Image (tube, rainbow over the protein chains, first blue to last red):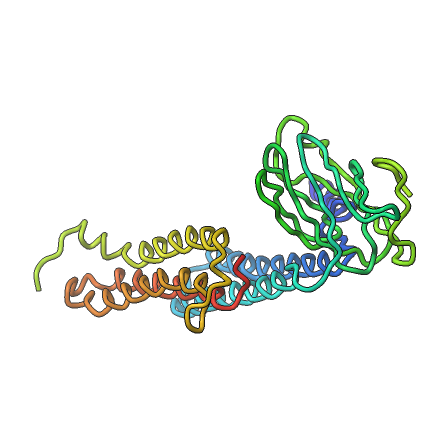
Length: 220
Length: 107
């Protein structure tokens, strides 16, 4: 049983990597989110450790316990300190992720169950299906719209996620540190084919931007 | 000091968390409304209308907790212990959850 549990650890941990993992960031915004994830994990681990120690103490022989130290020292002040630190970190990172300052603008339009993108090309603005082209090394604002239900744009390796809402235009900032192909998906359940509502983001070398896009959905 | 019944004592006990919950709900609603109506761009003294609209329900909840804290002992006598703790919880929770409103980007 113990061996099976140990053998399962690498299998479970393998889920922490891959093209759709927040923990494999490929840009500064996604890197911030990954740091926040690790900070929250550390905070949760500290609080869990405190609870485990209390449970372990409960199994020992009866003893005098300094109630004030456990209830207020650990239960209130320690927990509050962990929560305050993680909240401050979340606020700081949240502010850094917001679309402040200049950025390239591209449009992403969602519908059941596909994405279309409009961005600069060598022959003016070009529309593609299922493939978003961006330059690497600079911030990109994705302007999100939807024509039917609520969808959500998410490229875990490049940034946070944002809803695409009918009748509204939302703005999400993403950035790729290096040229490459990144996977994206709809992160809000939107109907029967929700799971297949995927797309790709191709980050180009800045020297080759804008790319030559000759037809809808084409690769350069 | 008059005798206070069970439900009245219960009311005092949940007054603090209820004040926090009420302020939070009102602030939540006003936040969405303000983003839609462009309140962050409207200044009211040193704060934007958006921050003011979210901060005012919190200030009201804090004031309510302070007033009740000043009266809890006189009203409940020896039964005031837990309700006083509840009022402190409501007061600190309101301060804690509303403080980011003054610094974070709202919309």
